[in-house]
Length: 565
Image 1: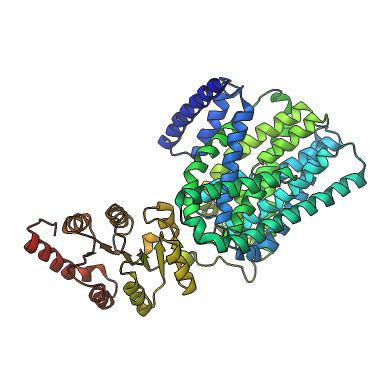
Image 2 (image 1 turned 90 degrees about the vertical axis):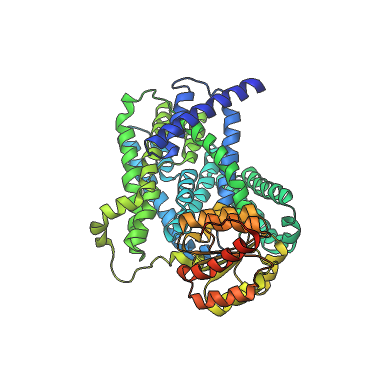
């Protein structure tokens, strides 16, 4: 059995790789390739995917990792900023779409309960699809991205309530309401416990936790999975548990390190989720249910985004924020499939409705993948008519440069103090990045911007806006890390001044050949002198040419080494 599962999974991953290659060649979203892989390996085609429970377990791992990492990036201020509007939009959208879906169900001949199931299923949007695409675009911290995350949390809470009512079918109403109160109490107790431990106890242990990278990695997985499983056990979705588990750690200095280490693991398991999604396709009774399918698709793809956009516009948000938030929500959630299947198991929802929702989910997810990836194009296309929605003062996006720094220092202990004094004198926004938790704690005590992380972490460099930094200084003694930084910065930010540290002449020669603006060597010049020159250079790279040449000549004359000038 284990060998057959391994063989099947291996074949599936190979097919997924080939589909991803095709998507890359045709410049299409990779998610589409993964869903098509599921269609190919599922019962609709090759029927390779036979162990549904194993694949579902892998899918849940990917879901938990994705939501946990999203939670790590959430600032507690986000709730205050968008919590009210997200709750309003999420609640009103679910209500109105549920009513619209119910009307469609009655129109095509479904009974009252079947129509209710249809309407509720159409109202939920896919947390996994949306957050995956938002993080791929690095827009989860944009204003519209934060609003969307809040809407999804609202939907997940409503989904948990809907699931409770489905499970209590056949019971009297007062029993259902009693169960609802018990669910709310359990959720409140567990969430409060989680946040108290995360906000009060874990910060006191952060030095111990981050002192060993292997333990930090294991702690992160245990924390995220443990709380996700607990929330699922008490009746909520694992998505809510994983998201809150990440949020509870969001203020700690090592979150960037956790996030960067978990992302490769997340990407693999989330691929399995999309494959599993595609494998659910069934065209049984497709023709006879075409009317229901088309009307359901119109509700999800057009009416749902329109309702969201209208509410946000009436609440004072700009047309761009309103449009891009609305454009992300035009699909059916994976939870909708669970809800419909439960209704089918209880004898309420017929097979044809299950098939319609499954096909509609796959189609709307595919279409919305394009609407999210190309939201800027579609916004510019409809920008003028959308202006009709804007009246009066608008709640605008805060500048995106809040986490972009003019000056960046990697490494603090080996000469970094002098550069920090220089940065303060220059009165420019700067950040210190170090792999030592004690350094980060010291920076926090001094109220300086600092991040615990690795200089070779591309995600981290992108997060701090390294492509716009005017000066990058590395006092790291690891030559491989310095080589990586010089190569990367010269590629994505050639105007930036790059100052790195070298322990010997061979290292300095290599770094100069790769394009370093200046290489600090212990025996040649002190940090104080280079600091004085930086102040006089007005942070212009061209001013470093003569200064750099002096050092190159010094190396050539004293060590007879050839350095590219």
